[in-house]
Image 1 (cartoon, rainbow, N blue to C red):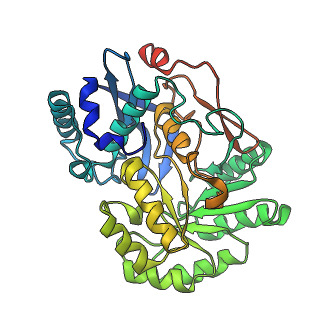
Image 2: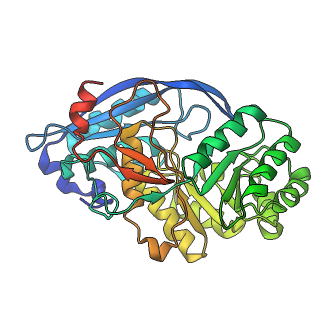
Length: 367
């Protein structure tokens, strides 16, 4: 099944039935973000079954306070969409554009169902021939905590490190980055920073200039989303390439995506299928970005191992030589105390499928 077959009427012939299983995932330690601190998060798992295959699993995981489909009636909407599919056997992509996390769950449940394997797409990654280069993520925290995380990432063999900034004093964040750069050149260690919109438009250029002295690869969302004119001004003159993340949320049609990219002209976009249109919507973002020679990489939105496996394998379907593939933002999902069995592992800064004989359906059933 291709990434687009969710909109094909032939699915109806398979008499697939979808069941919804909600789960609450608990973080091993509180996760601090620009939108507050998470101690847990809720996911809804879609189990697609038919007489041909007992199960295919997809994950619906809207992020509280961020996703465009983070709505009070989410579970009611999800139930209605699944009930309609169970009656008709048809999914309408256009109707699902306002609900990217639901679309992602459906896409991946069907993909798993038809593949009948954790190998959702056959690629060099899913065949365990090569790993996907990823960045090591340093979460917001105190100076001491962030410094400890940096050391752990370096010792683990990462050659691209991403630091979330904006939680502590900017001078302290600069000091931490200077420590890394004093030990490693930009050729040895790539540094990315994610401001999550923490800078005001008035101070942004000053901070970007100071960061540029440290050979920063890129900065995500220096100012908050929704300020198109200010962001376009920054992308035109910033000494550091700018990547858009939150800015992409709620741009759900090809026309909206084209308008945003043409107006702001970022150097990069960062794609999270649960936030940015499911796999289908992210394919559209990539198509529009290519036209404007805008680079991209994919990352996760705090999904479990099930969602992460799907994102990583989708990412590996792209021609890496054509895309000039940059380190991706994918992890292993090992941030929760409760999770299904791991489906990937990190070695020397690369994500690998692991282990080869994992039965995700059996693991999920016993979770």
